[in-house]
Image (tube, rainbow, N blue to C red; front, top):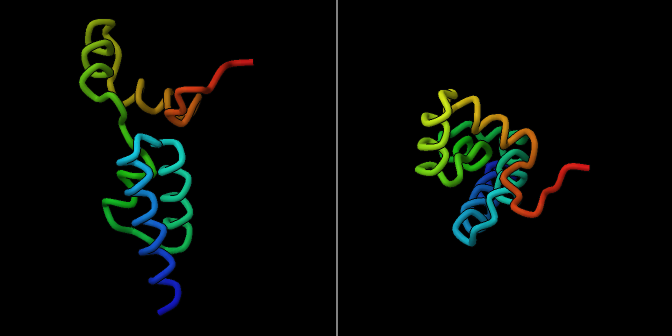
Length: 87
């Protein structure tokens, strides 16, 4: 159907953006695919990425913080956009 084609295209675009080092843009596209009914694990991995996983895990453990919490906080605050700044 047209909806499934649109979802598949959105996921493919999100995968390309993620591979190009654009996790924030990939996440936005994947979230649109999910809103249109995509419910596969890949769509959710693209929508909620954990970027720089090794460094994130190391720093979180070193500071006694939960890795998932730190990843969620980063995603909420900047959506993994390197250029994001606080006002």
